Length: 487
Ligand SMILES: Cc1cc2nc3c(=O)[nH]c(=O)nc-3n(C[C@H](O)[C@H](O)[C@H](O)COP(=O)(O)OP(=O)(O)OC[C@H]3O[C@@H](n4cnc5c(N)ncnc54)[C@H](O)[C@@H]3O)c2cc1C
Image (cartoon, rainbow, N blue to C red; front, side, top):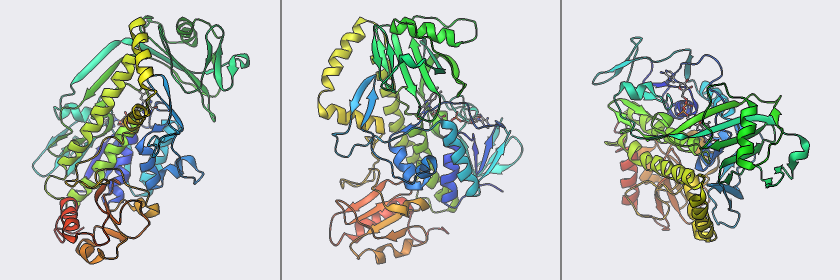
């Protein structure tokens, strides 16, 4: 068997998983059906905990190129309400504004550096599962097959995994790169006579629909309009149609035209909100959009999918290398399904809150009043960041189950880490030396931490002399009894 893991789909999530596997010592094969650039333009950036995960792996710095660490965002939005976050202590909302194409190109480059093999122009069309392997349609064999092949996942369908949820056909979204005449640009926003200034990067809801204006600093400006009441015509989508929809929603026709800096021109109708019935069928796993799809409002997709990849990567590598404890692979779904459920919940809630009509306007008044409570803003920030989803680590310390603190370059290796600032734990950890690194670095609120490769805290102590038995239990729970297999 040349490859222990084959990943169908070289989008962001398949590539991220390939990097995580490679960091953990397993060289996967990625099959990508496209031959050219990895995907059409979709996301304009990433929001949430994934930004910190990228920072931990040194990937954030590769995207921004400036070496500075990410800062929490002072503002974000929820259901077209501006959210002021700068007063929050421990604000979890981090953002990075980069097109998905660049994220994919960066991940592909990193994957190749790590020795991942990417076969382009190769569409997986079938497979058969045997007890100890999966046979692909070209006869090659692998121990695990991953469906990272997007919302229409072939792997999911071939594995007979249902995709329950809802499809709504009512909304039509229109979006394009545009150039806006200078007289309509005001303080970075869009001046709409009779309406006011639409602030940049913030959805604007009216009783007729939703509009947004995004003047990207290093790229073309984008205008998007979502409506319920203008049906999708048969004719191809044009900038003129976008202008008409904009005028319908905002009440004024701004003479914007095509941009010479970008080529986005897209009309979509309907929206799917679905989560796979199971994330696993035997030796087949689903990751990213193959496992869940939802509305794009607020841009939660990459935060969800890329963290799926980080969660599954080290566990799968442990299984391949023979030291995965019993049940470890099943924690992929038990930990990540709740994250998908939070995202499908809040994208549907946001979609309802930005809908047209006077009842929604009334609901928005009430919701707006609730937003004056700092505790509500805090709760929404956790929801947007995905940091309100914690994992069951079988113990109750305040840090366990949460995304761990910044440990400097140590987390770049993707190896399990024991941070010991007590000087007492090295002998306890010694039998796991082949799979857990021991370091010492300043910590807030703890004297020792056990951190999984996905950067989640598995165990923590505040004691000057932590209980060695508790640490042994945690190490065994996540990394198996020492010497259980060659690491
Ligand atoms: C309009 C739009 C805007 C969005 N905006 C945002 C945003 O601002 N922020 C955000 O975080 N998310 C956003 N998202 C969501 C984000 O784009 C997706 O969550 C993300 O692309 C999912 O990545 P993936 O790797 O799971 O799947 P995909 O990106 O769909 O990649 C799947 C890959 O698999 C390949 N493939 C498919 N079938 C096969 C096969 N049988 N064999 C081999 N290869 C195959 C495809 O060619 C593709 O490259 C947006 C999505 C859309 C549609």
